[in-house]
Image (cartoon, rainbow, N blue to C red; front, side, top):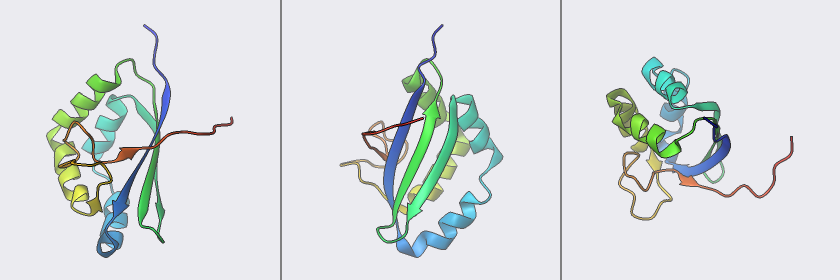
Length: 118
């Protein structure tokens, strides 16, 4: 079976009033959330913040063979859903019509990679 290695980048806006709370919860991410990320073939996952615009930029690598199925597994995990409920309340989506991280449209908007160099 061939793995579909791909790089993914996404953005969302952080509510300024939630800046410290967001940083604190990400300094101690729940173990069940980290385990699910790993189980869904996501590696090298980082979130960056541009405090001027309050845009969060996430970058990750997907190394599985069925991204959609892995994301369904992620959405089905009750601890991940609880985590998303908490963090979604601190964010403003840039995905038109999205109702939250469990929405199939997504909560974080994917952005196009226009350059990569290794």
